Amino acid sequence: MCRQLITPAEWDLHGGWALGDRIEWSNRACGLASLRMILLAYGHEAPTVTELLKLAVKHEVLTPRGALHAGIARLATDLGVPSAAEPVPVEELLGRLGDAPLIVSVTEQFPEDGRSGGHLVILRGYEDGPDPTILFRDPSAWGQTHDRVTLSRLSHSYAGRAITFAPLTPNGES
Image 1 (cartoon, helix red, strand yellow):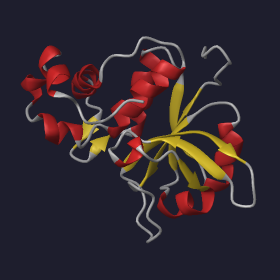
Image 2 (image 1 turned 135 degrees about the horizontal axis):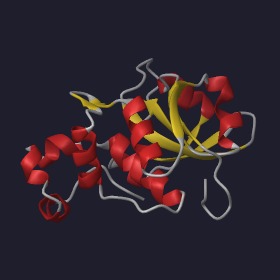
Image 3 (image 1 turned 120 degrees about the vertical axis):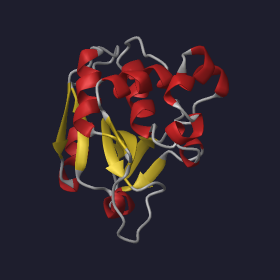
Image 4 (image 1 turned 30 degrees about the vertical axis):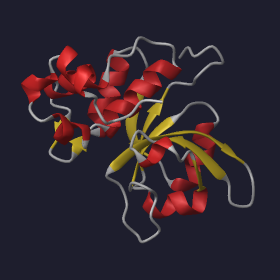
């Protein structure tokens, strides 16, 4: 599991200090930490979050609020995992999870108050049932102790946008 909080040692080792404040960047690195987890799941070399951050800055993937979905998809493709940024209705999420994980835009901690988007997490599978349980990886501190959410709860904070990936084979190849 990758965290979006960049350690001081990683930041220093990979020259993150040239970008500015480590904590400020860590607060915006959920998409890059998620990308790192995807690369690892597909069996590819995965740069550190700091290295991905430097690539994202170089390729103008970041905005003041975080990473552009299309930019993350381009980085994933460039790093060997074909991907696309696209709208995916909540009704299609389970069908999409049969072949590959997704990075989706949700509100952190999946509140049910109508706020949607702004935080990127990986949906990695589901358990069927009347209200299916979605298995996820969240690079935030909260996500270190939470890895399941019901589809009904997820749907309240899901923004309808996803980064999709080529099918994942059992040995991690795309």
